[in-house]
Image 1 (spheres, rainbow, N blue to C red):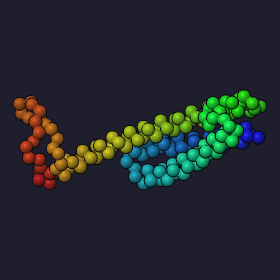
Image 2: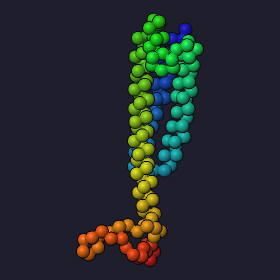
Image 3: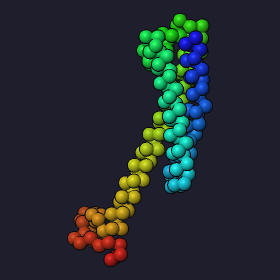
Length: 155
């Protein structure tokens, strides 16, 4: 009974996990294009999918914990060894784990893209507002900072 429920929860998570992966890939394109309306849409949908996947993950963990099994792959393997659905449980569990790992990798990549864009924007704002002046080479080829920074409006 528990094995059937667990397998059903795993199978139910494939569609939202695949949708999340596709959404993260679309988010990457939207980040590069700085398409803010699309990013807002993606964020709302992404949050709903993550909440759903977390809820199902908790349910799977609760099932394993109720059987006094570890709530990781080891527990799943122990349950699988006692079940007629054991091979399916492990196969589907590993496939879902791999899909979620792809989602995490895409999310990390998008996070790095955001950090790069934030640094670039901060640098541009410094230049526009006359913040710390960028270091430049002078006529003799040595590295020197301008003595008095000027804002773009004063240039």
